[in-house]
Image 1: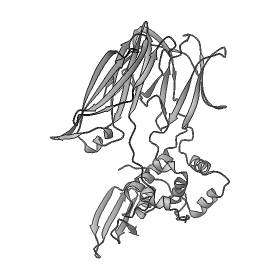
Image 2: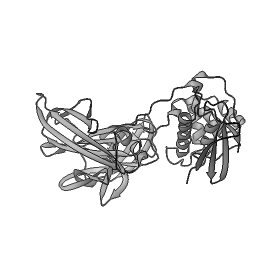
Image 3: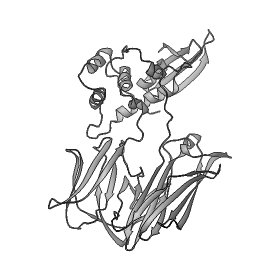
Length: 420
C-alpha cells in the first residue's frame, strides 16, 4: 500500500499542555458533505438558457443491496412559476446509480452529477426544486429560488471547469458558484458583456490592496453552451451556431486562500470593463483546524517539546503561529494549498473519530492516535487476546517495516502502546 509518511522533523518528544477539559471531552462534529447546486444563465437572442446543475455525494443518497451490487434511484423535479405565480415549466430528471463496492456507496468523494436545461423568455421567475429518493419516496424540497431575467440581468454566467479535457469537451466543476481551496487547480471561463476579439485583457484578482493573480489574456471564441452527461460527470461543449466570446483564466485558485476576492477585467487602455466577486472555500477542511489551539497542540506529534516551545514563545496569535509553522513545511510553496498540512490534519481527524475510549478522551492524544498521525494507516491490523485475557491490537507497516502492539488493559478502549 502506497502511503504518505510525515517525516519526523525532530525526534518525537511529547509536550505537556495545561489541563483543558474541552479537548478531553470535545464533541466530534457530524460531517455532512455539501450538496452543490448552481444556476448558469445565458442570453441567447430573445430567450435565456437556464441550466441547473446539481452534484450530490453518494453518502447523502440511499442505496440498497441487489444481488451482487448496490442500487440508488433518484429524481429531481423542477417547477417554474412566473411573476403571476402561474406554472410555466415543469421538468423531471431521473437517475439510477449502480455500485459494486459498499465503501463507494458511503463515500463523500463520489458524486451523482446531472443537470436540467430550460429556455425562458424575459420575466421574473420562482424555481421550486424537489429532490426525491425513489427507494424511500422521501422528498426534500429545496428553498425556492427567485431569478429576474431582465435586460439588467448579467447575460452570461462564468463556468468553473476542471483541467481535464476529453474529446474537446470540458468537465464542469460544480461548487455552487464558489472557488474551491484545494490541491486541484481549476480554470474559469468568464464571459464579459462587452469584449473585442483582437484586444488583450488584463485579469486581476485582488483582496484589499494585494494582487493574488494577474494574467494577460486574449479572448477565445466559444458558442452556445451545450451540457451533457459524460462518464458520469457533466461535460460542456459549445455550439458554434451562436457566437459567444470569453476569457479562460488558468489556475484561478492556485494562489488564493479562503476568503473573498475581487475579479477585475481591464482593457488594454486601462479601463475596467467588468468585475465580479469571488468566494473561496475549503470544502474538505479537516475539522481539527477549526480549533486553532488544538491544531497547534497536535504539532507535538512531529516536533520536540523544545522546538514547539520556541514556536509558541513568538509574539504572534495562534492563527499566525499555525500559518507560519506550516508555511515552513509546505512541499509546494508556489501554490497556496499545503498538501502536507492537509494530510496531517486529516490523520488528526481520523484519530479523533476512531480512537476515543468509552469515557470520550481525545482519540488524537491516545497512543493509537499518535502512531496513526505519525505513520498513517497501517497495512494490516491483527486483533487478539494476550495471556492476561486483555484485547490486543497489532499494527503492521510494510515500508518501512514497523510493528506496534497496543493493549487495552482497562477494557474501555484505552489501548496503550506496549512495544514497537
